[in-house]
Length: 342
Ligand code: GCU
Image (tube, rainbow, N blue to C red; front, side):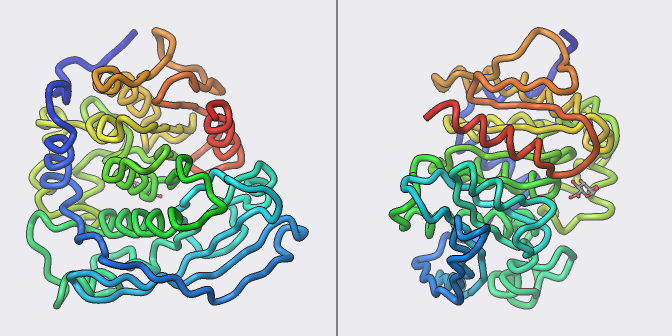
């Protein structure tokens, strides 16, 4: 099979060494974890999805060495049953349901789901005084290795995980993080930073997400840092036009998710993200997973065909028909992947 030669290998490095390289050079170091997270139920609707689920709006108040920050989340949970596997979904809107979150279908498959509207954590722009950014960066100023917005959004997913782990109705072993595109990059980072996740699901995350930078088509580091420099730490700018000889690459981000699962979903027509390099990152992360004693990526010795799914390893994968979108196909593959194991 076609592979990309001379990729820097994470094999031989400890997981904390991989993560500190990714944080120092790309995403930036996150704010410290909160000392406490307190939940307040703002509303509860037991008639949601034909009364099959309860939909709650909850405020989470976090206290930490940086001060205090409160953000809202939505939580939909089936009304009948127990030990529900759960998704923490970072989404582009706070609608329930939403075109990226078919909530009733998720409930019907026996899953609970949290939704974080990402801009409730901090705006999707270079304003570092907004919301949580304003709490952790007084006057909106960052050091060159302080995290950008992706790091702040990932911080929120870890915080929702803290809260989810206090809920008796959830299966605490099977709480996963999901995101699409910029929020797929975020989900992969959140997964790398917290071993308590069951799986990190990256949907069409592309450049600076699941796709290898080396030999990538579509978006490159120069493009992403030109329009969205604030997603990353300032150090990442030094890699503009250096995609071909980075000292690390995006398979390190997948590898840093070991030993828990990671899942990469691609869409055939998503050329900007580069499905081929999303696949080749899974291939390249396999060796590190195996070295940790995990089943790595089980796949044929060739590039995938549209419609294929590879669900037998700790690195899960599918490529579907269509364009850049978090579709029902993607969700059904994610639920199928989780359900086949436990
Ligand atoms: C832009 C950006 C991508 C990103 C996408 C998204 O297209 O260039 O890197 O993944 O937005 O988040 O929708």
